[in-house]
Length: 291
Image (tube, rainbow, N blue to C red):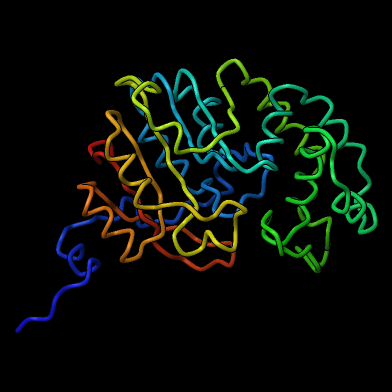
């Protein structure tokens, strides 16, 4: 009697070509986000450009996080308009302030004297408004190991070339990125909300594209404050979309079983982690005719 195949083995019977064997050098891609975002998708930008090489009316990013895909789409005119959605209160505060009062945030960043005492002073306060929360989030993101905002993340110690907290603190660069993003506010709408509330047909036309980058099934728990999501509910919601979509995921048996259950297409793509480990991530889409 033949042993029953696992979901991963089932998928091994289906050709799934790797789009590009060469790992993207992120230094070759414009760095537009103010965040050092764990799980960020700067390395995916060349693929995103291929995917959006069409008549795109609206790009929706329900788990926007560092939002490199949304920012690229807006800055490079890959979509007529962009909708960014984020549930995390800290991350959302940054986007809120950038699109409403970016000059205040820029001034705070440029005038901040980076030191352990000053960082601890900011991190130990409880902001009483969205501006204070936005600035605290920027400081936390730029000084924590790996840019992790979830509870328990420690501060950078030695850092790059032994620079410690200064390793990822580039105030002039941050100020420029924030000003550049604010200049795109006529093309970008930001909403603080739950991604699952934005998969309704009322949100799109046949020229709408969804880029969906949820907390990953395995790694999400240690990286994000809101890491617990119902992955099957997400697949079910996405399967009912009447428009184009592209999802990114960690490649494992459970996620592949959901891809199969909801009759989606998948490919793998190489990427390199912050620890310079090369691995494959999963792309899931309604079709790959564009690839």
